[in-house]
Image 1 (tube, rainbow, N blue to C red):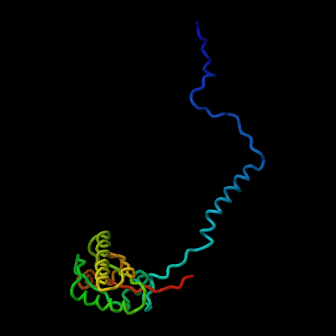
Image 2 (image 1 turned 60 degrees about the vertical axis):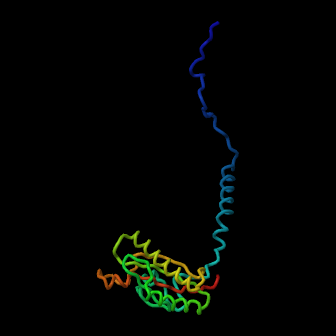
Length: 196
């Protein structure tokens, strides 16, 4: 029994797409594009039509007319004092000294007596060290201030922290007197903003 070999042109291996062209009805492409457009508009337009309610707090303005350090830096007024005093730290430290604790007791009294506004605590460092190291140290300084204020009875939900590391110095000279000014915990009273 002999088998006839099939010509190689007839052997089909694996999947081969059809070479026949599909015919589409007139207007089918237009209908497809309209359907895609309708789906996209249902997904995207609600996000554009209604803005989320604004936060009731604006982190750049204080109730006393002051601003956060970043906004002050942008306006060229960095170093303007608000109602809360800064605390200073030793080199490479986030430990609160006695003088800093006295300042924070006074700050805590002011915060408790003045409404329900929030306070942002900024951690700052001098220019020595890497950006990453100083951002971490600034975060530890801000947290130390926050934790001490909470221990004095300030509600934790009224306090937030941010670290600027060495990025927003009060003084730019490279000497100990200048570095001492830059190693600080700065507290900003955030302004309450009406919902829109």
